[in-house]
Amino acid sequence: MNPPDKADVVIAGGGPAGSAAAITLARAGRRVLLLERDAHPRFRIGESLLPYGNDLLRELGVWDDLVADGRFMEKRGAEFGTADGAHFQRFSFAQGLGPAHAFTFQVERSRFDALLFARAATAGATTREHAAVTSLAPDAHGVTVTYTHAGTPHTVRARHFLDATGRDAVSGRLLHLPKIATQPARRLATYAHFHGVTRNDGDAAGNITILRAPGGWFWLIPLDAEKTSVGYVRLLADLKENGLSPDADFDRALAAFPALRDRLATAHRVAPAHSTGDYSYRFRSFAPHPRILLTGDAAGFVDPIFSSGVLLALKSAHRAARLLLRHDERPLGPLTRARYTADVRRMMNLYRGIIRAFYDAPSFELFMHPEPPWDVRRAVLALVGGRTELPLPLRCRLHAFHLCRHLQRWLPLAPRIPSLTACPPPTQA
Image (tube, rainbow, N blue to C red; front, top):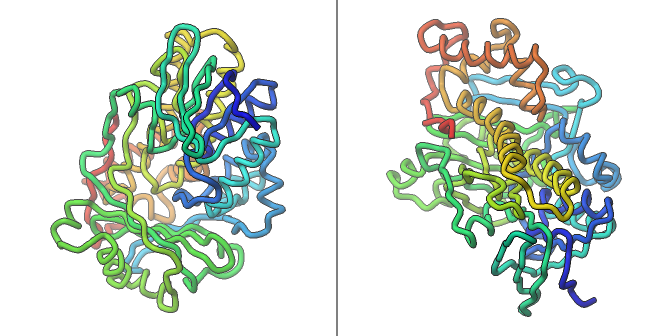
């Protein structure tokens, strides 16, 4: 099939954000060209879904596909602790969020993204793999997009362009958009897939595990019956100080802490380790031109701690697609662009607030308390579950949580955890 030379919307990036937007737009009858630089299946990190994202997955028509696939692990809760094994808390989604959001899935992104990309094609979008955008030329009436498809250059004219290219952020790079780092200290995440990691029993078998350590933290995410994603996030300065490679430091850290040693005692790595650095940022505007919108990680990324990446990608892409449906041929006005940026930034900032708490030792002490004051943890669990539209009672509890975590520095509302060393938290950019 010859590639189209005209489209209503060109979307760059065939991950969750790009595919979600393509499905929404194509179902409404818009001509959509979805470009993916690589080919599915391809490796991506960000493997843990949140229960409040289930509603959008159902609307997109992919929830039944996830259930029918049979290989994705059900995620019925989350557990947090310290890497020395001295402190541990387990949270059940059914108890904290109710039966409607009692579980979601852990997903190996190679399969999950391929499933969404195929659904976009079924919805009517024209999809292209091995298709990389090389230039953008926006004007008052649309955007001229140049891309290479399997090495051959093509040009397409569109009413709007939607950037869903993740941390590649093709719009930011090609249009030289101003970018803001949202952490005062640089971090590095190293991660790999393992077989043989010890799992929880029963309904907790698919839980994500987050373990705090001095200066960093670990994740363990069961992906299917055999495979587990294991990651380590630490300050880049600490890595440079010990002089090890990221891979060697990863192995050292996994062997250094009792909680990790116990879970990995019979495990072996089944894929090379990957590393990602300087991953927390955002652009000043998520609608930098009347014909361009940024979604998901192409707009900004907070931090991987609470697995908000895929959720924010899906939600921002859905908002962007609905916005473009309302405007059709019209450009996006200044107020509309400002509102879109503010709405997506609001969701990001909700997570940035509790991420600050995670990196801060007194706040983490409060979070680990089984019965914190004023039931403040209920609001945190709502966010951990992916609820970004908080009713007034939860908003009040969230404010109370932030008040308590500041008081914890001087007044021990929760027992101290001496093994923790505070990491520099993300800024409120």
